[in-house]
Amino acid sequence: MRLRPFSLDLTSPLETARGPIAAREGFLVSVASGDGGTDAPDSSPGLGEATPLPNWTESRSACESALQESAAVASSASASRACGVGAHDALSRLDPDETPAARHGVALALADAAARDADRSLASHLADDRGLRSPGESVPVNATVGDADAEETVRAAESAVDDGFRCLKVKVGARSLDADAERLRAVRRAVGDEIALRADANGSWDRRTAERALDRLEPLNLAYVEQPLPPGDLDGTARLRDGSDVPIALDESLAGRDLDRVLDAGAADVVVLKPMALGGPDRALSAALRAREAGVEPVVTTTIDAVVARSAAVHVAAAIPNVGPCGLATGSLLESDLAADPCPIASGETLVPSGPGLAGDAFDALR
Ligand SMILES: O=C(O)CCC(=O)c1ccccc1C(=O)O
Ligand SMILES: [Mg+2]
Image (cartoon, rainbow, N blue to C red):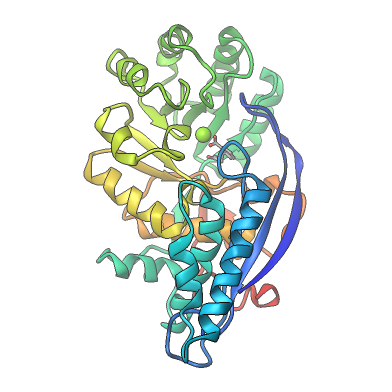
Protein backbone atom coordinates (compact mmCIF):
# COMPACT_ATOMS: atom_id res chain seq x y z
CA MET A 1 0.00 0.00 0.00
CA ARG A 2 1.37 3.42 -0.95
CA LEU A 3 0.41 6.83 0.44
CA ARG A 4 0.93 10.19 -1.19
CA PRO A 5 0.02 13.47 0.53
CA PHE A 6 -1.58 16.35 -1.36
CA SER A 7 -2.91 19.80 -0.61
CA LEU A 8 -5.40 21.76 -2.73
CA ASP A 9 -6.69 25.30 -2.31
CA LEU A 10 -10.26 26.33 -3.01
CA THR A 11 -10.68 29.08 -5.62
CA SER A 12 -12.17 31.14 -2.81
CA PRO A 13 -13.15 29.89 0.66
CA LEU A 14 -16.62 28.29 0.89
CA GLU A 15 -18.33 30.37 3.59
CA THR A 16 -20.55 28.36 5.92
CA ALA A 17 -22.18 28.90 9.31
CA ARG A 18 -19.38 26.76 10.77
CA GLY A 19 -16.67 28.93 9.25
CA PRO A 20 -14.90 28.97 5.89
CA ILE A 21 -13.40 25.96 4.12
CA ALA A 22 -10.30 27.29 2.34
CA ALA A 23 -8.14 24.27 1.49
CA ARG A 24 -8.27 20.47 1.44
CA GLU A 25 -5.39 18.26 2.49
CA GLY A 26 -5.36 14.53 2.16
CA PHE A 27 -3.68 11.36 0.92
CA LEU A 28 -3.88 9.23 -2.16
CA VAL A 29 -3.87 5.54 -1.30
CA SER A 30 -2.87 2.88 -3.79
CA VAL A 31 -3.02 -0.83 -3.17
CA ALA A 32 -0.55 -2.69 -5.34
CA SER A 33 -1.22 -5.91 -7.23
CA GLY A 34 -1.78 -8.78 -4.88
CA ASP A 35 -2.97 -6.54 -2.04
CA GLY A 36 -6.46 -6.60 -3.46
CA GLY A 37 -7.28 -10.02 -2.10
CA THR A 38 -7.88 -11.39 -5.56
CA ASP A 39 -5.77 -14.30 -6.71
CA ALA A 40 -4.84 -12.61 -9.98
CA PRO A 41 -1.09 -11.95 -9.79
CA ASP A 42 -1.30 -9.04 -12.25
CA SER A 43 -4.45 -7.40 -10.91
CA SER A 44 -4.64 -3.61 -11.39
CA PRO A 45 -3.56 -1.40 -8.55
CA GLY A 46 -6.55 0.22 -6.87
CA LEU A 47 -6.71 3.91 -6.06
CA GLY A 48 -8.33 5.61 -3.07
CA GLU A 49 -8.37 9.02 -1.41
CA ALA A 50 -8.46 10.00 2.26
CA THR A 51 -9.23 13.70 2.68
CA PRO A 52 -10.10 14.43 6.30
CA LEU A 53 -12.12 17.52 7.14
CA PRO A 54 -11.49 18.43 10.78
CA ASN A 55 -14.76 18.65 12.79
CA TRP A 56 -16.37 16.27 10.29
CA THR A 57 -13.81 13.48 10.31
CA GLU A 58 -10.55 12.81 12.15
CA SER A 59 -7.75 15.39 11.94
CA ARG A 60 -5.11 15.24 9.22
CA SER A 61 -2.54 13.86 11.65
CA ALA A 62 -4.90 11.17 13.00
CA CYS A 63 -5.71 10.22 9.41
CA GLU A 64 -2.03 10.01 8.50
CA SER A 65 -1.19 7.84 11.53
CA ALA A 66 -4.07 5.48 10.79
CA LEU A 67 -3.02 5.16 7.14
CA GLN A 68 0.63 4.54 8.04
CA GLU A 69 -0.43 1.85 10.47
CA SER A 70 -2.60 0.33 7.71
CA ALA A 71 0.30 0.33 5.29
CA ALA A 72 2.46 -1.47 7.84
CA VAL A 73 -0.25 -4.08 8.53
CA ALA A 74 -0.77 -4.56 4.80
CA SER A 75 2.91 -5.11 4.02
CA SER A 76 3.57 -7.50 6.89
CA ALA A 77 0.43 -9.49 6.10
CA SER A 78 1.29 -9.74 2.39
CA ALA A 79 4.87 -10.70 3.16
CA SER A 80 3.77 -13.60 5.31
CA ARG A 81 1.34 -15.12 2.82
CA ALA A 82 1.57 -16.57 -0.65
CA CYS A 83 -1.25 -14.40 -1.89
CA GLY A 84 -1.49 -11.11 -0.08
CA VAL A 85 -4.71 -10.11 1.56
CA GLY A 86 -2.87 -7.40 3.45
CA ALA A 87 -4.98 -4.41 2.54
CA HIS A 88 -8.12 -6.30 3.58
CA ASP A 89 -6.55 -6.98 6.97
CA ALA A 90 -5.73 -3.29 7.23
CA LEU A 91 -9.27 -2.27 6.28
CA SER A 92 -10.86 -4.43 8.94
CA ARG A 93 -8.74 -2.68 11.57
CA LEU A 94 -9.78 0.84 10.58
CA ASP A 95 -12.60 2.15 12.76
CA PRO A 96 -15.13 4.03 10.60
CA ASP A 97 -16.21 6.15 13.60
CA GLU A 98 -12.69 7.08 14.74
CA THR A 99 -10.92 7.48 11.40
CA PRO A 100 -13.60 7.62 8.67
CA ALA A 101 -11.40 9.38 6.11
CA ALA A 102 -8.58 6.85 6.50
CA ARG A 103 -11.07 4.01 6.16
CA HIS A 104 -12.55 5.71 3.11
CA GLY A 105 -9.12 5.82 1.46
CA VAL A 106 -8.38 2.12 1.94
CA ALA A 107 -11.96 0.93 1.25
CA LEU A 108 -12.04 2.89 -1.99
CA ALA A 109 -8.65 1.58 -3.16
CA LEU A 110 -9.81 -2.00 -2.57
CA ALA A 111 -13.21 -1.46 -4.21
CA ASP A 112 -11.55 0.19 -7.23
CA ALA A 113 -9.11 -2.75 -7.55
CA ALA A 114 -11.95 -5.29 -7.30
CA ALA A 115 -14.08 -3.43 -9.84
CA ARG A 116 -11.15 -3.17 -12.26
CA ASP A 117 -10.37 -6.85 -11.88
CA ALA A 118 -14.00 -7.62 -12.72
CA ASP A 119 -13.86 -5.17 -15.64
CA ARG A 120 -16.84 -3.15 -14.46
CA SER A 121 -17.42 0.33 -13.14
CA LEU A 122 -17.26 1.03 -9.42
CA ALA A 123 -21.00 1.85 -9.50
CA SER A 124 -21.80 -1.55 -11.06
CA HIS A 125 -19.52 -3.30 -8.60
CA LEU A 126 -21.25 -1.62 -5.64
CA ALA A 127 -24.73 -2.19 -7.09
CA ASP A 128 -24.16 -5.85 -8.04
CA ASP A 129 -22.89 -6.62 -4.55
CA ARG A 130 -26.28 -5.56 -3.19
CA GLY A 131 -28.53 -6.95 -5.90
CA LEU A 132 -29.41 -3.49 -7.20
CA ARG A 133 -30.30 -2.88 -10.81
CA SER A 134 -27.73 -1.50 -13.24
CA PRO A 135 -26.64 2.07 -12.40
CA GLY A 136 -27.59 4.91 -14.73
CA GLU A 137 -25.13 6.91 -16.81
CA SER A 138 -25.71 10.22 -15.03
CA VAL A 139 -26.71 11.60 -11.65
CA PRO A 140 -28.59 14.90 -11.05
CA VAL A 141 -26.62 17.38 -8.94
CA ASN A 142 -27.17 20.62 -7.03
CA ALA A 143 -25.00 23.72 -7.28
CA THR A 144 -23.45 24.78 -3.98
CA VAL A 145 -23.86 28.48 -3.16
CA GLY A 146 -21.87 29.74 -0.17
CA ASP A 147 -22.76 32.45 2.31
CA ALA A 148 -22.52 35.99 0.89
CA ASP A 149 -24.67 39.12 0.85
CA ALA A 150 -27.97 39.02 -1.07
CA GLU A 151 -26.57 40.55 -4.23
CA GLU A 152 -23.65 38.15 -4.52
CA THR A 153 -25.86 35.18 -3.56
CA VAL A 154 -28.26 36.06 -6.38
CA ARG A 155 -25.37 36.43 -8.81
CA ALA A 156 -24.04 32.97 -7.89
CA ALA A 157 -27.53 31.44 -8.13
CA GLU A 158 -28.20 32.97 -11.55
CA SER A 159 -24.84 31.87 -12.84
CA ALA A 160 -25.56 28.28 -11.70
CA VAL A 161 -28.94 28.32 -13.45
CA ASP A 162 -27.24 29.68 -16.60
CA ASP A 163 -24.89 26.70 -16.35
CA GLY A 164 -27.89 24.34 -16.41
CA PHE A 165 -28.41 23.54 -12.71
CA ARG A 166 -32.06 22.90 -11.77
CA CYS A 167 -31.35 22.58 -8.05
CA LEU A 168 -29.42 25.03 -5.84
CA LYS A 169 -28.22 24.62 -2.28
CA VAL A 170 -27.64 27.90 -0.47
CA LYS A 171 -25.64 28.15 2.76
CA VAL A 172 -27.51 29.96 5.53
CA GLY A 173 -27.08 30.52 9.27
CA ALA A 174 -23.94 32.66 9.09
CA ARG A 175 -26.01 35.88 9.29
CA SER A 176 -29.25 36.97 10.91
CA LEU A 177 -32.47 35.19 10.02
CA ASP A 178 -33.74 38.46 8.51
CA ALA A 179 -30.71 38.60 6.22
CA ASP A 180 -30.98 34.92 5.23
CA ALA A 181 -34.71 35.21 4.54
CA GLU A 182 -34.00 38.20 2.30
CA ARG A 183 -31.21 36.32 0.48
CA LEU A 184 -33.46 33.34 -0.20
CA ARG A 185 -36.41 35.53 -1.21
CA ALA A 186 -34.13 37.34 -3.67
CA VAL A 187 -32.85 34.05 -5.09
CA ARG A 188 -36.39 32.67 -5.50
CA ARG A 189 -37.44 35.89 -7.26
CA ALA A 190 -34.40 35.72 -9.57
CA VAL A 191 -34.55 32.03 -10.57
CA GLY A 192 -38.33 31.50 -10.58
CA ASP A 193 -40.46 28.68 -9.22
CA GLU A 194 -39.13 25.86 -11.38
CA ILE A 195 -35.73 25.67 -9.72
CA ALA A 196 -35.45 23.51 -6.59
CA LEU A 197 -33.99 25.43 -3.65
CA ARG A 198 -32.30 23.93 -0.61
CA ALA A 199 -30.91 25.83 2.41
CA ASP A 200 -28.13 24.45 4.62
CA ALA A 201 -27.82 26.00 8.10
CA ASN A 202 -24.95 23.69 9.19
CA GLY A 203 -26.43 23.28 12.66
CA SER A 204 -26.24 26.96 13.57
CA TRP A 205 -29.76 27.76 14.79
CA ASP A 206 -31.23 27.23 18.22
CA ARG A 207 -34.72 25.74 18.52
CA ARG A 208 -36.52 29.07 18.63
CA THR A 209 -34.63 30.52 15.66
CA ALA A 210 -35.11 27.32 13.66
CA GLU A 211 -38.86 27.39 14.28
CA ARG A 212 -39.05 31.02 13.19
CA ALA A 213 -36.84 30.23 10.18
CA LEU A 214 -39.15 27.48 8.92
CA ASP A 215 -42.18 29.78 9.37
CA ARG A 216 -40.49 32.57 7.45
CA LEU A 217 -39.14 30.32 4.68
CA GLU A 218 -42.29 28.26 4.19
CA PRO A 219 -43.71 30.50 1.40
CA LEU A 220 -40.49 30.03 -0.63
CA ASN A 221 -41.30 26.35 -1.23
CA LEU A 222 -37.85 25.04 -0.31
CA ALA A 223 -37.05 21.43 -1.19
CA TYR A 224 -35.59 21.15 2.31
CA VAL A 225 -33.73 22.87 5.10
CA GLU A 226 -30.54 21.00 5.95
CA GLN A 227 -29.25 20.63 9.53
CA PRO A 228 -31.27 23.44 11.13
CA LEU A 229 -30.24 22.45 14.69
CA PRO A 230 -27.00 21.22 16.31
CA PRO A 231 -26.10 17.62 15.38
CA GLY A 232 -27.06 16.09 18.73
CA ASP A 233 -30.51 17.68 18.99
CA LEU A 234 -32.51 14.90 17.36
CA ASP A 235 -35.51 15.41 19.65
CA GLY A 236 -35.62 19.10 18.83
CA THR A 237 -35.33 18.34 15.14
CA ALA A 238 -38.13 15.75 15.28
CA ARG A 239 -40.37 18.32 16.99
CA LEU A 240 -39.41 20.99 14.46
CA ARG A 241 -40.26 18.59 11.63
CA ASP A 242 -43.65 17.76 13.19
CA GLY A 243 -44.51 21.44 13.40
CA SER A 244 -43.76 22.45 9.82
CA ASP A 245 -44.40 21.51 6.22
CA VAL A 246 -40.82 22.36 5.23
CA PRO A 247 -38.89 19.09 4.75
CA ILE A 248 -35.82 18.58 6.95
CA ALA A 249 -32.49 17.06 5.91
CA LEU A 250 -29.81 15.93 8.36
CA ASP A 251 -26.09 15.96 7.61
CA GLU A 252 -23.82 16.61 10.63
CA SER A 253 -26.21 14.50 12.75
CA LEU A 254 -25.02 11.40 10.87
CA ALA A 255 -21.26 11.79 11.31
CA GLY A 256 -20.02 9.50 14.07
CA ARG A 257 -23.60 8.64 15.02
CA ASP A 258 -25.59 5.53 14.43
CA LEU A 259 -27.85 6.04 11.40
CA ASP A 260 -30.57 4.01 13.10
CA ARG A 261 -30.77 6.55 15.92
CA VAL A 262 -31.38 9.29 13.39
CA LEU A 263 -33.98 7.22 11.52
CA ASP A 264 -35.71 6.08 14.74
CA ALA A 265 -35.96 9.67 15.98
CA GLY A 266 -38.19 10.56 13.01
CA ALA A 267 -36.12 13.71 12.65
CA ALA A 268 -35.44 13.73 8.91
CA ASP A 269 -37.12 13.56 5.52
CA VAL A 270 -33.70 13.40 3.87
CA VAL A 271 -30.24 12.25 4.96
CA VAL A 272 -27.12 13.79 3.47
CA LEU A 273 -24.45 11.13 3.07
CA LYS A 274 -20.78 12.03 2.73
CA PRO A 275 -18.75 8.90 1.98
CA MET A 276 -15.63 10.59 3.44
CA ALA A 277 -17.39 11.25 6.77
CA LEU A 278 -19.14 7.85 6.86
CA GLY A 279 -15.98 5.79 6.41
CA GLY A 280 -16.16 4.71 2.78
CA PRO A 281 -18.21 4.28 -0.39
CA ASP A 282 -19.44 0.87 0.78
CA ARG A 283 -20.73 2.29 4.06
CA ALA A 284 -22.33 5.30 2.37
CA LEU A 285 -24.28 3.06 -0.02
CA SER A 286 -25.42 0.79 2.82
CA ALA A 287 -26.60 3.87 4.74
CA ALA A 288 -28.49 5.10 1.66
CA LEU A 289 -30.34 1.82 1.27
CA ARG A 290 -31.21 1.61 4.97
CA ALA A 291 -32.54 5.17 4.86
CA ARG A 292 -34.67 4.36 1.80
CA GLU A 293 -36.13 1.36 3.58
CA ALA A 294 -37.12 3.67 6.45
CA GLY A 295 -38.80 6.08 4.01
CA VAL A 296 -36.01 8.67 4.21
CA GLU A 297 -34.47 9.93 0.96
CA PRO A 298 -30.67 9.69 0.61
CA VAL A 299 -28.59 12.49 -0.95
CA VAL A 300 -24.88 11.87 -1.60
CA THR A 301 -22.42 14.75 -1.28
CA THR A 302 -18.68 15.31 -0.88
CA THR A 303 -16.65 17.12 1.75
CA ILE A 304 -15.14 19.05 -1.20
CA ASP A 305 -12.90 16.13 -1.98
CA ALA A 306 -10.26 15.87 -4.68
CA VAL A 307 -11.16 14.21 -7.97
CA VAL A 308 -10.61 10.59 -6.86
CA ALA A 309 -13.02 10.69 -3.90
CA ARG A 310 -15.42 12.95 -5.78
CA SER A 311 -15.63 10.40 -8.60
CA ALA A 312 -16.17 7.65 -6.04
CA ALA A 313 -19.08 9.62 -4.55
CA VAL A 314 -20.57 9.87 -8.06
CA HIS A 315 -20.41 6.06 -8.35
CA VAL A 316 -22.08 5.67 -4.94
CA ALA A 317 -24.90 8.01 -5.98
CA ALA A 318 -25.28 6.22 -9.33
CA ALA A 319 -25.77 2.89 -7.53
CA ILE A 320 -28.83 4.28 -5.67
CA PRO A 321 -31.89 3.73 -7.88
CA ASN A 322 -33.59 7.04 -8.84
CA VAL A 323 -31.44 9.17 -6.59
CA GLY A 324 -32.41 12.86 -6.37
CA PRO A 325 -30.02 15.78 -6.92
CA CYS A 326 -26.75 15.19 -5.07
CA GLY A 327 -24.11 17.62 -3.77
CA LEU A 328 -21.44 16.38 -6.14
CA ALA A 329 -20.74 19.55 -8.14
CA THR A 330 -17.91 20.58 -5.85
CA GLY A 331 -14.95 20.18 -8.22
CA SER A 332 -15.31 23.74 -9.50
CA LEU A 333 -14.70 25.02 -5.95
CA LEU A 334 -11.10 23.77 -6.14
CA GLU A 335 -8.42 25.94 -7.71
CA SER A 336 -6.55 22.91 -9.02
CA ASP A 337 -6.99 19.16 -8.83
CA LEU A 338 -5.01 15.92 -8.92
CA ALA A 339 -6.14 14.93 -12.43
CA ALA A 340 -8.60 15.94 -15.13
CA ASP A 341 -12.22 15.40 -14.02
CA PRO A 342 -13.73 12.22 -15.50
CA CYS A 343 -17.20 13.31 -14.24
CA PRO A 344 -18.06 16.43 -16.25
CA ILE A 345 -21.18 18.36 -15.24
CA ALA A 346 -23.68 19.66 -17.77
CA SER A 347 -27.41 20.43 -17.66
CA GLY A 348 -27.48 19.87 -13.91
CA GLU A 349 -26.18 16.32 -14.17
CA THR A 350 -22.84 14.64 -13.70
CA LEU A 351 -21.64 11.88 -15.96
CA VAL A 352 -20.87 8.54 -14.32
CA PRO A 353 -17.58 7.17 -15.69
CA SER A 354 -18.06 3.83 -17.42
CA GLY A 355 -15.01 2.28 -15.75
CA PRO A 356 -13.44 -0.11 -15.29
CA GLY A 357 -13.23 0.89 -11.63
CA LEU A 358 -13.28 4.59 -10.82
CA ALA A 359 -12.60 5.97 -14.27
CA GLY A 360 -10.88 3.59 -16.68
CA ASP A 361 -7.35 4.86 -17.32
CA ALA A 362 -8.09 8.47 -16.30
CA PHE A 363 -6.17 8.17 -13.02
CA ASP A 364 -3.34 5.95 -14.23
CA ALA A 365 -0.73 8.64 -13.54
CA LEU A 366 -1.85 8.65 -9.87
CA ARG A 367 -1.70 4.90 -9.25
O1 LIG B 1 -23.84 19.43 -0.59
C1 LIG B 1 -23.23 20.18 -1.35
O2 LIG B 1 -23.80 20.85 -2.20
C2 LIG B 1 -21.73 20.30 -1.30
C3 LIG B 1 -21.08 19.85 -0.05
C4 LIG B 1 -21.26 20.76 1.13
O3 LIG B 1 -22.11 21.62 1.14
C5 LIG B 1 -20.34 20.58 2.24
C6 LIG B 1 -18.99 20.49 1.97
C7 LIG B 1 -18.07 20.34 2.98
C8 LIG B 1 -18.50 20.27 4.27
C9 LIG B 1 -19.86 20.36 4.56
C10 LIG B 1 -20.78 20.49 3.57
C11 LIG B 1 -22.24 20.48 3.93
O4 LIG B 1 -23.08 19.92 3.23
O5 LIG B 1 -22.59 20.96 4.98
MG1 LIG C 1 -24.64 20.11 5.00
